[in-house]
Length: 255
Image 1 (cartoon, helix red, strand yellow):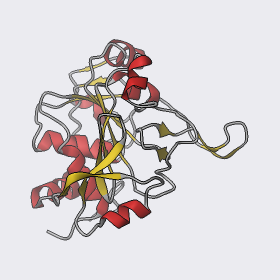
Image 2: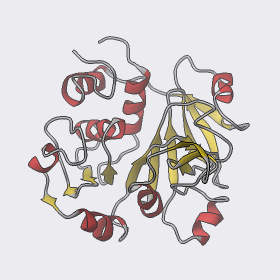
Image 3: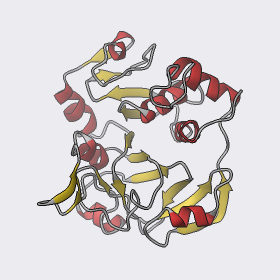
Image 4: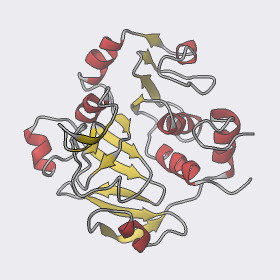
């Protein structure tokens, strides 16, 4: 099997965060591949719900959008989007949500709204979609994103999706469920301490602490014992390249 890419490593590591009894709200792209990889490896009982309203999906091929008909072909049921968010998400029936964004800060707050001042931004982004609801109502949130100082400021320009707002107590005071659990990048894996601040628990092969510090907008801390992220197995790479994204739409590979 050929060498893995940074994206393949992120996908394989993210899949390990999902358990056999989990229910996960899935979007398209890299998080979707991670969820489907988990279902084919360590979490065959994983229940995937897509924003479009397909419940317990088991797509036979890569969906290109949340409205792709392939999501319905093997689903347990298909419900209106309002039921997916109201009956499942807001009612606390979903364990895990996958999110991304333009910025994420040290407390796990995510910005997908504007870069710069809200009234006169440098860049206006797509906005929340369902991200704020997912971050507020799932028991835990996972984030997959490239790692750069631009993406990891000490404080986001706009809080689209709340993490530990002002710390874990701040989130509890707002009455929000759960919170961010892990951030997986192309350099490292980060988790959150008792105060709700991000710290590094695992470095990818060939990545140094200095590499992470240089790509982070605050003085990020490290676990007492920092692990090395395991590389993808041959079987994980085969599944990603041959079954889940054979054309390299999201991984950049392809046959």
